[in-house]
Length: 507
Image (cartoon, rainbow, N blue to C red; front, side, top):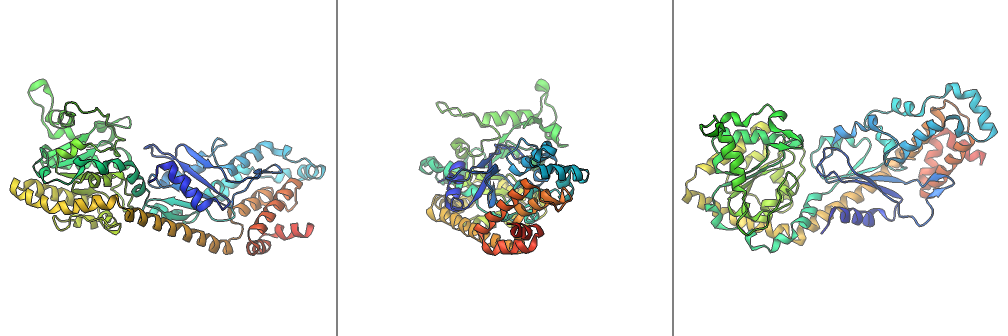
């Protein structure tokens, strides 16, 4: 079982401790950007400061497994970089330009600088001019080996675009973390698949608490449910406010417009039946513990919700995309022993079956899982809801009974060692393959971004072939580092960089 930090510590100990790799993690806390960045220290017993230079990692690993990869946020890093961040190389570049002529200490360096400083190109401007929004990342994750991106999404165009700068490693992170979050519910008897739920107060359960960002599609779904006159058979967790937005300010959809005002206090059925109904539906039984439910409550199992409904409509984090990023939301009904339909990208149910879960294609039409167009996919889900809603009590009981064996299998499988082992075996294979790819790429690009940066900052930026004494020391350190790491890469670097061979001759 893994919490977030335990998982990162385990990853570091298992795959990176015996390597000179740095690992960068972030804790998004539901944000849409990269927040709370943390750089894990290298596990080195020796002093990491070598004659004034930071200890250089051979590669970096960015753990982007909690949230979907946010390419738009990454491509703003070029505009947002400042010294106040965890990326050492960018800080060093800023420091270099700030030091200016004071960088040179020897008399020879000072004399040479006076003659050539008119050719000097601002270090920051130089790197901005030779990098695009994606290639700029090599300044943030430098190393002699290509950096690794650990992610948790499938069929992702964003990940595909980042392969220019990263080697991707997929892990079903939420499969692991959900087992940790939900572990105690395994022993709750009320989370057992139960035919009595077929006669629950409401047939459908929908959590639509958050609807900003990638979750905006949920407003459209709620609108469709109301337009189709299905809302009265739903138990909602719908909030008017999310992330500081009132839903009418965030979208053109005005759900309340489907309900004319009533004579009583001039409110609307939207208020009476959706918002007030939500409050009534979610009223805790007498004597139960009060739990504050918010848009961040997707890892919480409300037993009362599952005892008072029959089927959950799982509204995943992503929908209007082909990338699959399954989260704890998908496992809520599985843990609670509930049948489900999904509002998620195409291939979601296929992915669940790959991991050993069963779905309900023998009970209702699940062809919506293969529909690429999001509007048509949503409509297909609505059609299944309409059909289930139209069944009389006897018919619905017969349908529901067919679901129970699947629910029981899924719950048992979720908590099984085989499910966890499948995820870990897959992760292990992907990580080891990434290490192999690093070596393959290193033969074509010896020295990686670390030597590319050194070449640009020590020579091209200053438009010189003169070895400033301070740079010469630094470059010799780089060469000795790579020679110790790999003789093969060292020889390739001597051929690729003119100054590497000359430094060897000077030595």
